[in-house]
Each structure stands twice: as C-alpha cells, then as structure tokens.
Length: 323
Image (cartoon, rainbow, N blue to C red):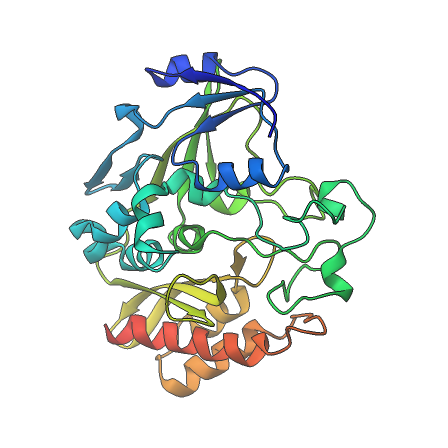
C-alpha cells in the first residue's frame, strides 16, 4: 500500500476544500480499505468526514425523508419512522452484510461502493473496467453476475439501499468547492455502455451530502426481499424492492427495482405496467414477475436467476400488499 496524506475535516465546506487530485473522502471506510488493499485505488490524500455532524441526520417530515450520508445502515434499519413509512429502505439496510458492518457502514458509502465482481477485485485480471480489453466474467465464473446489460461488463450493482431508494424516487445532493447539485438516483447510476470505468456520475472532489425521499402516499406500501445462498452475511443473488400505491386490492401505480441483476439497479418497467390498474392477486403477481425477465440475457452460469427472480418479484409484490 502506498503512503498517503491524512486530512481531518471539521466542516463540509472544509472537506471539499481539502480535496486534491487523487484524494478520497473517508467515512466508515469499509469499501475504501478493501479497494486500497486490492490496489484498485491508491489515494494521494484521505479526507476524514466521519465526525461531521452536518452529514449525520435523519429527518422525517410531512414532505418526505431526508438522510445524511453518515447515517449507518444499522441506524436506518432501526429508525421507527423509516420502518413505518419507508419499510423497504429499513429492510434493505437491515439485511445488508453483518451486524458489525451495519454499525460501521454508512448510507453514502453503501450507495457509492464499487462492484464486487471477483475479476474486478483481483489484481491479476486486467478487465475492461480497469482498462483492459476483456470481461473475464462473460466466459468465466459468472454465476453471480448480471442477467441484464451484460454485453460489455457483467458486474452487478452492490448496493441494497440503492434498490429501495430508487423504487422510492429518491434524489441525492452533491457538493463540491463551488456549488451544490441535485440528481435523481435513477439518473445518477450509469451503465457500462455509457461509462465503462465508472458506476455513477459523481465527480472528483464532489461529496454526497444528502439523500431525500419524497413522502409516499398514505395508501402506498413498500417491501424488500433479499435472496442469498446463506441466510446471513451473504451478498444477494437476487433482491427486489417494491413500492405499490393501492386502492383496496387495486394497484394505482407501482415501482419495482431489481438488484443483483444488472450493473445498475434495474427498473422492472414491464412489471410496473402489468400491475398498474389491476387487482393484485397471486396470478397477476406471477405474470408481472414473468414479464420482468423477458429481456434478460443470462450467461452460461447464471440462468438460475431467471426463475429465482420470478419468485422473488412475485413474493415482494404480494408481501407489500399483505403487510
């Protein structure tokens, strides 16, 4: 590991002013330390923002939810208002990793973490995402890789909270030394076909300062289900977040997002359309789940994700309605 400078920020403005070429912000540091150990990132300076109170808050108001990026996954999962009004987000945060990591990992870090593809994380493989000419997953060990948008790079997006937040139409606020900007989470993440070497639109020197979720309708219900190979401390092989606005048993509108399916959280728009205006039954949920997979392009080792996602999508829809 190469040597680097350490800078202790006492405010958000100071933190962005302390950035230099090749620097990074350090909060929980869970993924950052892994990237440094794996020599995927060798920072010139780490700017510590862990102790900034202006980035650590949860505000649940009539207009919606506002969360600071330093809020931990444990705090998100245990917050009473989030459990009540934004249930899928609490569930997604509460099923990530282990209790120890949830107590350390922050919302900002969870959203911005880099792919967990074992070829990308291994310094012996110079894959396309690292400037090479080959995606080793496409012809290699690919049982955990993408079934959508996998033509250039078969990574899957690693953030569970991103699935729930995207389903809730969340926005993020980003600040640099000159200005702040807001961007919807759906527009923030980018496919490899748009930018092969980055997973989102954050720029050097920019700091994520806030996540906002518009208030859900009083008639809306949300649910999140993660399916892994093990019950605990495991990356998902399939995960789904659903937000349904209901009038009785009839779905007025739906937002369905799949994780572990694509290089970015994947909107199941066909499923949303199939649910809208219909009475939600087991038969409809199964049909809506099936149409979500019609455009999937599974690789040699991950075809099992097709029936798995059909089941998880249907269960998430029905769980949202019944809870």
